[in-house]
Amino acid sequence: MQVKLLRALQEREIRRVGENTVRRVNARVLAATNRDLVAEVNAARFRQDLYYRLRVVEIRVPPLRERREDVLPLARSFLAEVATRAARKATGFTPRAANQLVRYAWPGNVRELENAVERAVVLSRGVRIDVEDLPEEVSLALPGAHAAGEVVRSRRSSGTTSSPSSRRTTATRPGRRAAQDRGSDALPQAQAVRGARGLAS
Image (cartoon, rainbow, N blue to C red; front, side, top):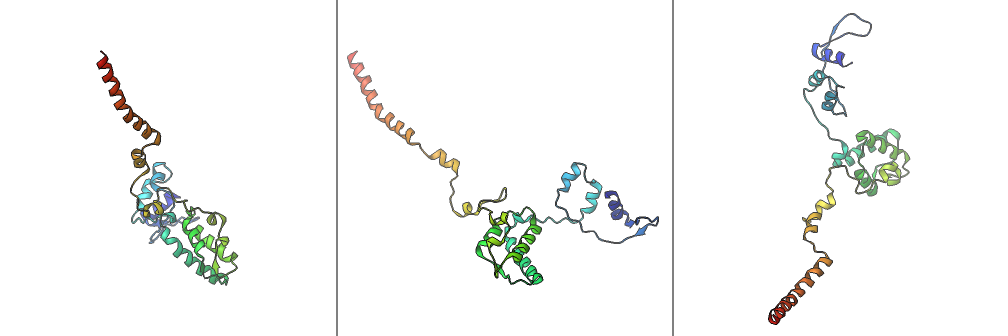
């Protein structure tokens, strides 16, 4: 299949199944994938020449977990579309449901969000989608369930500048402090003992 696609892109001609006649084509190809094609080329699962033939203009769309600010606008758009198609009265999300939508990592990307909203609209009994209407994995998403490498907003907005390692290096343990106090008290006593020994000798 890759060889045929490469020939169609390079030679701009195709041959239909069961025909011996070559047909000229003039078309633009828009290709999309959720795989790392560079890794696929290195693993010899994707042709290198086809990769460079397709890669004329490359646009990378980050996954939904890396652009959480788009979750609610997309969810509202899906809700309006599904509600109109299914003749439902759902018009929006409760604050709790909106928070859970943003918290969830969406490993299935936009399609998973669309299916979750459609399910919620169908099961909802009111005009607003609540947490109970969402899929179980979405409704149980924890506040700390962020994607790997993402900065937790609560830490960033707290305004603290000290790190756990710096706190460990600057803090003094009670036992060590007591030992230091005992050492400072014992210093004059040791000097007095050495002075007494010098007089005796």
